[in-house]
Image (cartoon, rainbow, N blue to C red):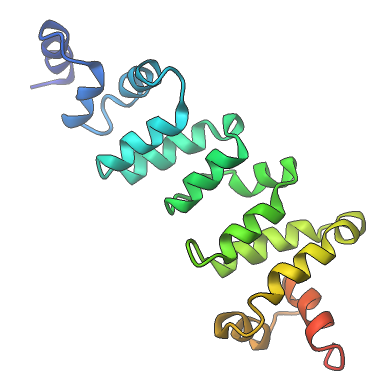
Length: 180
């Protein structure tokens, strides 16, 4: 059966349009997205959860990416907790100045992702002004993980020249001043 026949059958049976998702994840993307937005009255996080509840991480991530500008901080954090990585996340969080909250999230046992924590830390240290504003909070957050083997390994690993991530230089300045 082709997509047109399936559409017609869904329409005739008066079944909800999001049921097209069961036939093909890809062929009916736009119709399913629109039906879900209508069903959840534009509560976009519910759409992401709907996809995840149907083991469709790819479409959940795609939907999250397409709507990256519409997410509130709490919604984006809920998406990250679900191990999704929408494209444009780093830039969006940086533009909104939410880096510290995402560093805390990525350093938490719930989501732990050292690479993402370093990326967001680098963004929080990306200018002299930002570094002056954020350094105390950053050092307090990273200090909680000072004895974590993963963090120690990151600091001890040979860094490329120039010295690598700003976060590594920053932490070494505080934790190993003689070495720095």
